[in-house]
Length: 134
Image 1 (tube, helix red, strand yellow):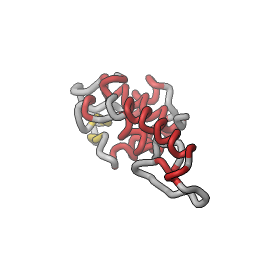
Image 2 (tube, rainbow, N blue to C red):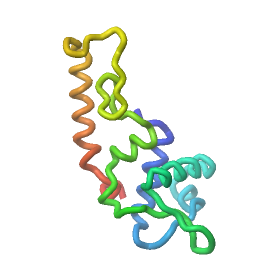
Image 3 (cartoon, helix red, strand yellow):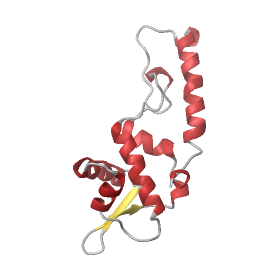
């Protein structure tokens, strides 16, 4: 299940993808239009800026905007930034792997099933971009 933080990040990025090429968007406008608490949104957008998904402009006419065209940022990348691992078990994660203490992965049927789940989910999230949700 996606965290509330990930849901808000996707809603905000979807909003910014729809406004791509139209200049910076005020954080307050995003919060109001997408029904996201302003303080929470500030934290999320700063995190996405640090990860170079977003950029910002200060001063009059300032706000946030996508650093790249919407079709260049996958949903998998966004979710990894905001929520961390996409895999449901740490022993099948590609980017956040942690070996289970009590398991032999080569013979673990749970590991094999959840690796299939991970691959199916990634098959969608790695091919879908912000353009698909805008």
